[in-house]
Image 1 (cartoon, rainbow, N blue to C red):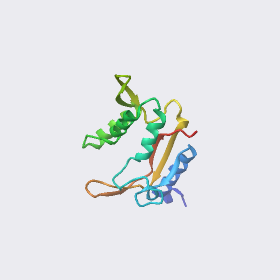
Image 2: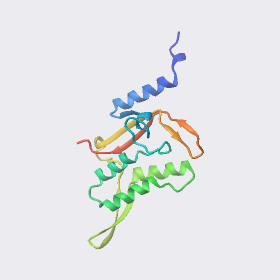
Image 3: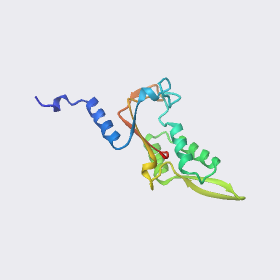
Length: 158
């Protein structure tokens, strides 16, 4: 009998997680990091961004920027103004790949720089996370259990 007939979505999920772990990703189960989990990283089931990981990444790789600029960058990551999922994804991709423009006062002058969510020059300093079975409750009270979700945050491992 062919094994193809017995290959399930669960097998695919496990295979994806195994490959990502071999590439250096940390694996977490969605239930464990949910608000009622053993290691909560979300305050409710609507959150899809692991805020502490993102904030830690901003502060660790942008040490040359003042705190108020990094707080502004963090707010920009969390603030999506479009009702369109596609537009929000495009916006987040732009922040991830191009950096987040922030302004701040330095020595009496207003300066503008970019804060980065990931360290592209030193990828080994980033934290990679794959989460499976992450429950997300939508605005219309729809519940979805996702396939493996990857998060990449830049946090020095030194």
